[in-house]
Amino acid sequence: MVINLLLEGWLEEPVADKLLAFCGHSKGTVYGKRGCHYIRDKAAGFYFTAARDSPILVLTDFMDTRAACPPEALQSYLPHACSPPAPYFLCRFAVNELESWLLADRQSVSDFLRVPLTNIPVSPDDEPDPKNTLINLARRSSKTSIRDGIAPPAGHQGPTSPEYLNTMTRFVISHWDVASAMRCSPSLRRCVERLQQLNQ
Image (cartoon, rainbow, N blue to C red; front, top):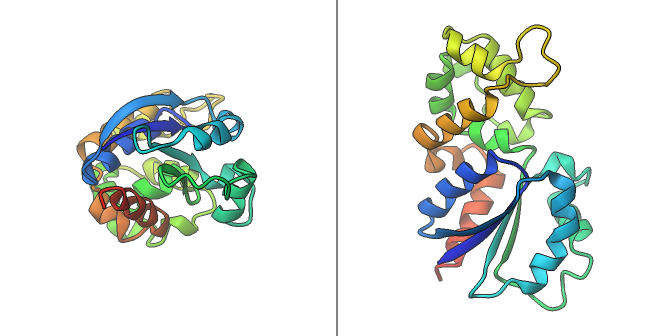
């Protein structure tokens, strides 16, 4: 099935590509990549146009919603979510952040960052700031290119290295394993299961 995408940021696209391929789908049109506020503004419109011939997967970070739980976050995005039903609208929240899903493939993260497996969180969905967790892990890397590619250099104003997106995109494409990550991230597992249901 061809599935369109409404994404919070640029890193969500290679992740979505992996998820769609894993679940036997292909990518349609990509929308968004303009932050969480854009998704909040546009989600209802996509909801009411979602149909079998134009299903949509929305990927965004749960921590940006400031809601108590994902169902509450969805309610804030879709105040009229119960009428009419839209089974081909899949709004999935990475708990707490997309980096939770990446950290969930613990062995691949350990190998890529060159840090011991014991340093990788066992329950990444419980990390309050998964991106910061990833950055701090990268700072301990034995590989200079990893430290420089993820952690911000001294004096840099941003929270990550200017090469963060390129570095993590390379990780997702070449190393990240969906099946392995599902075992440590309940929110990722729910996303995969929902995508697989479309095949039925």
